[in-house]
Length: 188
Image (cartoon, rainbow, N blue to C red; front, side, top):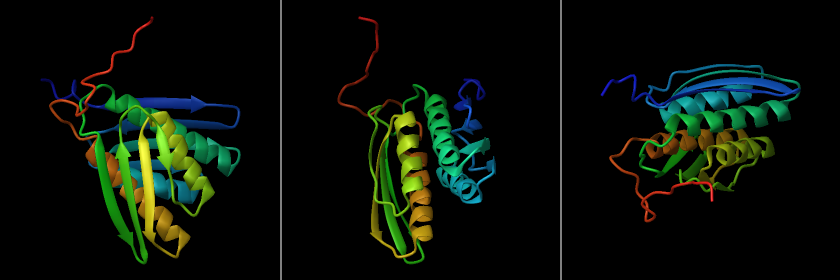
């Protein structure tokens, strides 16, 4: 098989009156994240997600206010991850536990095409990011803060753990693990 043909890649652009976000995602990468995002903490979290998941990503994002920018980056990135994985059989379920100083966070994901989110995060904007990302990726994501005091450490440990769990869940397998075998969509 041609290695380029098997490349799991997507480019997604989302433009609204409030934002413009362009994301390129290569699932089978090395974690090379290049982000041009006007919000520095958001840039740091998106780069962290890419690096820890082993996904190459290039993202450019501009927006009018932080809320719109964070939400639309999450939506665009979730869509890009979903399109890049496409129908390839993947491990699907994974979890990671990550420490960062006094914080310890566990994240579990299931790429089941049934979006659901249960979050323990001290920052409502980054809870909104992960929820928007999961809904657009159509993933189930659970986060648990085992311990932590510093909000920054908890949020960053969560993004690291999410990246590690996604990297494992998106790893290729010979066939998808499911009791349903496969789901076929049709017009009825």
